[in-house]
Length: 489
Length: 100
Ligand SMILES: [Zn+2]
Image (cartoon, rainbow over all chains, first blue to last red; front, side):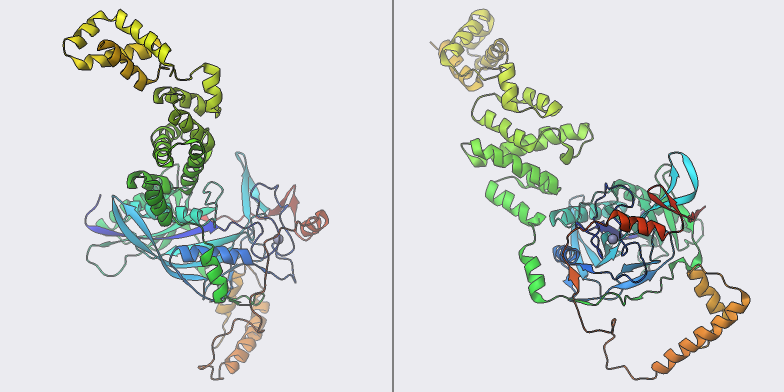
């Protein structure tokens, strides 16, 4: 790493807003439809049509703005951004220029245990473009195929302040932002489906210099780790240029994930003259207090509030809680598992900790090894809850539970069924346990002698022998008690 | 503001349009007279008037988030309005940004 240059990063995120219909027409936003089935005269830009704004898209962008501590502009207008490209049938994109819905927000990120606030410049509403296909399989086409299903799908563009000082901070910002947007249920943020995309502006300057250096704009990063890699490469590239006496030029560069380098995109110099002007087809939006208050009242629980609730109401540790709330899907999984577990638990507080332990230490570890996300977990949260009930009722021991867990991970089988099928019910019958303990004592004369000569820890070996004989099914607490009684007779 | 042929060339290139020399001369005159009219409007003192983005007075024209599927006839008509079709796709000229 360098210690001579300060790195300045600002990010622009496009996140698809979770609506059923497009922003200005009634076509579906379904991602999996056949090409060009979700199209109509409005989104294909036929002459004489009128766009009509989707109210729910406005509600969701305002909700996101509130969660990001933004000022909500009651008065908002749409603008036409002109550019000519076949993915845009109208030859302009409806976006916002002056008066976006949200401005001046912030979000906290944590890197190496240090928390820092990153400013949000603005969040505006706009429509997505269509999809162009340039090749079929490995065959390059000498024309392009356009699918306009995505044309007109609502996006919010979230522009940050140039507040990030390292690629790690940029990655942390994206993680926090994505998580928050998932919490407020404004977007699925699925990066593979292009529902959460990021462009980056990056420059360097010698420490102490006030003016920003010349920035490069990076595109085509399809994952958060890709953003971090591309930025790290770009830092090195820019430092090398400056160190060898050169000057960084302002340009757009594309990330090549295979070669792991950024490449200049030689676009025409006038490509960025968008000639914005207010869209005469769309009247201004003027939100009243009631509209905004309603959204405020119904905002889903945010990560900080959820954290406080898990710690205060359930008695979870701050460490466990931070892991659980870091991903909304994980937090939802945990609470669903806990709900099931609580139905059979004697003490709900104890279940809260046990469920957290099973998910954090066992499940996350296994998911990580299999490169699966919590949403792809082979074990349903309900079955984790059932497993915890079996343990808390004493039906199975913790050790047996781990074996059952391995089976569950294979095919999400109900743990109760596994216990019955494999005959894994814990032995808690006193007569049965006395019998096995006596056998263990009879077979291990030397250990018994050690114990009787004062080496009390020798009892551990006898417990082990009993567990082995019972194939792990004997209730360990009862075995301990029974052995002590038998040996001290 | 005096409009020149250079301005016409630039705006034409933004809109991906090509013109003959004679057409350009004509456009310089026509666009020039439109801009001249706007210069006239600019003489009005608007320093105390808020910018307006729309001629009407209505606000908040919006709709509920309910899907309405286009009929097959409508989709067929949309394809008919396009220059070329290839299966389920609109066939368009290839436009790619150049890379180093
Ligand atoms: Zn449509």
